Image (cartoon, rainbow over all chains, first blue to last red; front, side, top):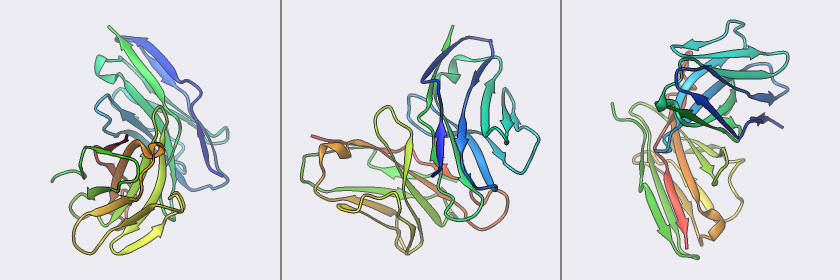
Length: 115
Length: 117
């Protein structure tokens, strides 16, 4: 069975500081994608960043970067220079590269950026 | 290019009634996914459809739930004889599914929040 674990239900960070959200997953497959989604109070799901498992280089998108450790099945999200607009639920997810491509989600981490 | 559209945004039903949730994928997208989000939980996959075909419904409850994606018109998630436990946010996502690096990227709609009284 495929599982995604986010062990931090809630986190907070001071504005302009850096925060890291953790995620581990379990799958026997070798070909997959990993994602971080943001869900602000509007409840819209917004893709933050994606990582292809066959790539060793960690993905970056402006202030967002990941630390992908394939052997450890770990996929953490680092947010630099945190902004008030980063306050949201953050979900880690993965999908297989072939097949149905449905996403498996973790239970989320609620991040609050403190002014 | 409009994003994924879902309606209604909020739906209130009494126990035993039917709920119909609609999803219009992004233009050019032929793949639709439905997910359910219970309060304080992550999204759980329900069903994956292509035009006129159900590809994977492994996440759908066996009774009362059905989904379709006709040749014309939106995808419909139908819940018959709703119960309080069906109260949740239901999200639809679409993807192009036409090959290439971003073929599988899913774009989400704003969700429908169903409340069963």
